Amino acid sequence: MVRPAWAEAQEQCQQRLDQRDAFLSQALQAEITLAKRIRERLCPALSRQAEAANAADKAYAPLDYQALMDCRHRAEAQLHRRQSVLYRDRFGLVYYTPQGAELAAQADGLTLALRQQGCPYGNR
Image 1 (cartoon, one colour):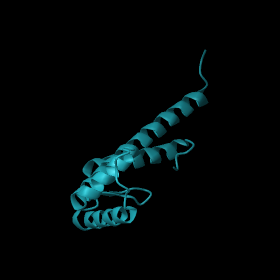
Image 2 (cartoon, one colour):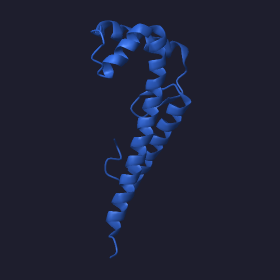
Image 3 (cartoon, rainbow, N blue to C red):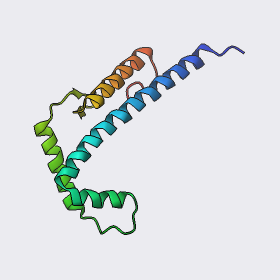
Image 4 (cartoon, rainbow, N blue to C red):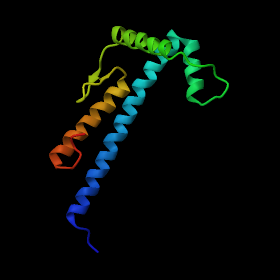
């Protein structure tokens, strides 16, 4: 049985969407890892406490969310001051790591190709 051309085109669109989403996920993970390293350096005890809470460890002490947010803001401010922006994606998100910047740029390239190809969801 021969597949209709539209079904094949839909499958190609979905493969490109999946690839784009994987690039974005990896790019964001690289940036999260960088921010987490900075936060751990600035607030090591609080970071360990947050990790324990995230792991659903029943032995963790209650988390001071305000202190955690303050630490996160300090980490982000330090990142903005000390790192150069390597890439800004189509949503305006900034990427500081070479890996995150490269993957985000590839994702943006795929989005443009999806739009040009007329794929649904090519604007996400």
